[in-house]
Amino acid sequence: MRNLAWLLAAAFFLLNPNLACGPDEPEFQYGATEMRKVVEGEWALTITPAGGSAMQVVVHLAQATSAGVSLAAPEQSQLIRSAYACGTRTLVRGAAACAALTQMPLAVSYVSGEAAFASEPMSGVFTVGGLTFGPGELELKIGPYQILTQVRADGSLGDSRLGPLGTTGTLVVTHG
Figure 1 (cartoon, rainbow, N blue to C red):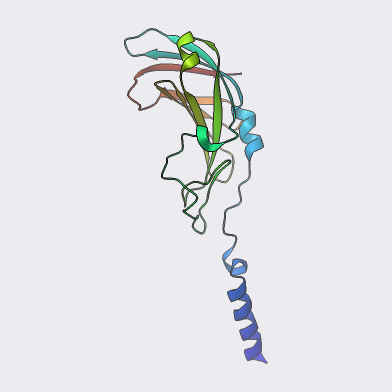
Figure 2: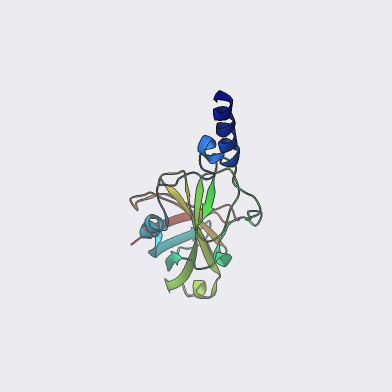
């Protein structure tokens, strides 16, 4: 009888290892609703390239409906399955394994400001690390400029800087 109990337990484990090992993916405590709340809307940017004059532009950000506007690295694909205790999710497409990240591709559209920006390509992504909604990194590509801004869960902004795409200078970002 004791051998039968062990045999049943072993068979149950082999047929359903998730009971002993836990779920395949981590459980995130936030989703698209919380991310959209802090990132969607109008953003005013003042870009002053080193040695240049200040340029202002207002853009509108919204969750993208396709992955085509994402700044995510091309090597990230759905071919890599997340490892146990690690997970990455993108609210439109899959991402690299073994990092608890959420990426929301953004549609970026020109609203007003420096007329030259109206015809420039624009894209963006909002990335939050961890299973709970902490500070995230907003990354925008507006023409030749890469904008990096920390956005906290309450919607307040942290550090803003021009990214490493070869442009230096100062940046002022406001949302709302």
